[in-house]
Image 1: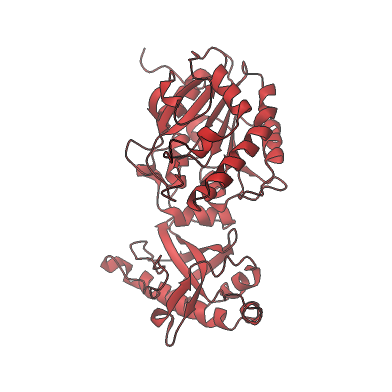
Image 2 (image 1 turned 60 degrees about the vertical axis):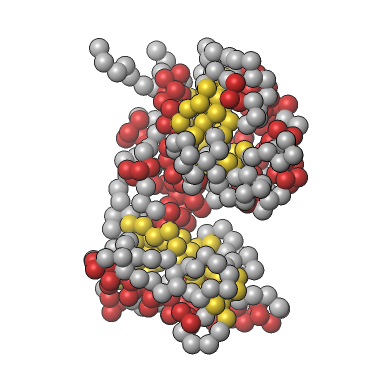
Length: 412
């Protein structure tokens, strides 16, 4: 049996709950996505399990055949890997925001007035300054890298560290910055290190020239770095070691790039790919077609549908789905005797919730020989009628491996 190739298109947060009997996806004009629904087999999917609200990180791990309950160590390490930090086993990593704080006293006496510092984007010089913080008294080195926009990643490296500590991000405007606390006695040293870092970071950022210029122009300072999602880096078996397939990721967001790097994917840089609604979808899909020449499994991640769901922007989300549909037409040229195409999402991000929910997502599988069904359009409102019925993310992965002859028989 010849082995076939696999292309996953993951449209982040595309599905919704009903508002006046409508959703952005069901309302959008999507002739190309509908075409794939007609020639494929459809269903709905719980990425992790029914009733479990997935993060994009845990959802992608499940979609790629990994049990997130076994290999997920927090979002921090994934963000750090995606930012370009070469991680080592035992590092403790956090995702972070540049935020704005006001008040007197130490950083922990001050109140968060904006968790994103007015969505600050010019953070390169701020990051350089933070990398000079000296934690040698603890035998620890700190590494800071910028993410997209106001985001960053922070990694602590040294002996005797623990991820059993609390976040410093209060996650709420009007609350004071939280002091890091140890959740067990083995984490007390780590908590002290983080609190020292928080104080030094605020001291440096408060009067940094970038922030003074922002203040002069009436913009919020990025004068604090808020940590959350800490985790200890642990070794994860690579995708190629585990499944014998060469994997490529095409994504604009640090988080998704980080997932790719942690499982050993080639993370391809594509011109104009931004991870927001201004991303160059044409370049993204063309890059996927090229990657299929050199890789066995290609994953394309599209972020903006999730952001628009978080923003509660019904019309914006609908419009962007129609934009995806226009550009995805290029995939109609694929040879489905040699390539298996999957179109799905990692989770729902309903407009009326503005966050991830456990509502199942629609899924299409297109490949020669699939048992096509009566579903003729791509919508969370009709996908349940399809032949796949209701499956989990790990089920989808196994189904696709079987369709493409990339699995072996269980038993004699």
